[in-house]
Image (cartoon, rainbow, N blue to C red; front, side, top):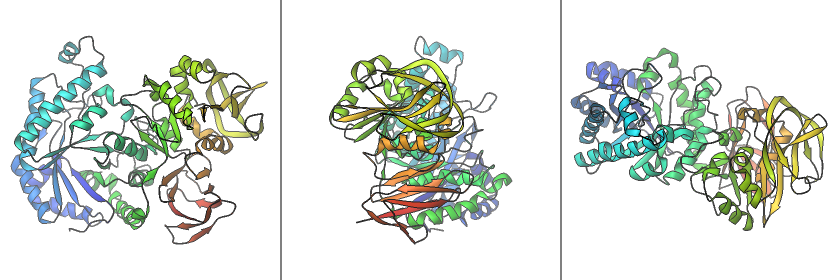
Length: 570
């Protein structure tokens, strides 16, 4: 059973109910595990001792640990700090309540006695508003109160207790995929990533249309890069599950593909019981087999991830998940919690405006020759300071309902053409001064047009503004010509560009490799600009050479199928 993939490890999480099942009937559990293991080469198992007020005994953990170790599989401990009952969504423990605090301490102490590694599933937060919490909060905001409380819990009830029982233990905090609102439930990415030995990343995206978290698929990649910036070299892997994916098996696998495209060291699949016993997910394990074999065949040929540095300070809010919406439009964005002062291109969405020094940082980048690209949401949040320092563009109170677009062919002197979007969309109207900043793309109105892409020079660089629709998903409705104008803003950093509709993703690496993946439900042709210095392109998926004509290659993309390419330069 000790066989492994060459380029990554796969772990499976066993919730406390699996541990209890093992204790009740070891033979039945072992047969179920073999059903999973015959498809997936499991290198590690996480065994949980507490979830939702359900406990296992220490002896149960040790027995199960012994079985897996005999199979040559590494074993670590796990805990999910949620309360029992789900009468109003998921209910956290109350850390103002002594009984709940004792539960955490007891569970951590047991795990530290059994394992040298413990992972906290992504319920290490609080959403409690009981009278005790209200009294302790006082005049503070819920965010401020909860962050302080969870740092105290991390120190006193988790790390101190674990290290007291086992000085060699490593404790991992697994963060959920909803990073845009961490602070509202007490997560403090900056502080906690320093406290814990390692972090782990939730990469679940599921169904963006119907799931209550409405997360674009690109997030499975983007969040890996963003959390890596919070704990460089200590982000151990990505974690996803099958829930809300039965509508489309590809949506389940896509979480794994994008996690590995971000060069995760390990993937954790959640969870043992669901994948083996729940008939709704009976084909998922077999599909994982093919995905992991495919990825293991070429993953080591990809270099380090590269893309546009996208600055989002810790605990920022605004234009939630805009980075992933743009990623779904073929713009390769890399998240960073630190301002990327040495980058040639910097992308700033509304959250970046919460950095009180952002104007000075932007100016320094521009004076050094960088291009800074902002969203209309960033403009709205920072407005007067932007006008005073850079250029007179403002976010007005007016809206426009648009479907027809124009682009420039003369660097903004005029816009022309009539390109029809997929659907009409609602956009904010930006006020700007003509002849001081230039339209690169616009939407037609009655007797006028509205800017979609604006750009002007500043210092040795250029500053640009992209108009984001009120519904950010309506970015997908912009026609290819407008999307191409947006993509062109990033050319100073990346030498590869898609000419394709929204729904096609691009992932870049520092050794001239790239991956193209279509999330569309139909076949679609795609042009990739690979550069004049590229003499040919090698398809790592098929082993075939693709000729380059005028610095471009044409691809026919199949839904959900990765095209992995290597540029051969002159």
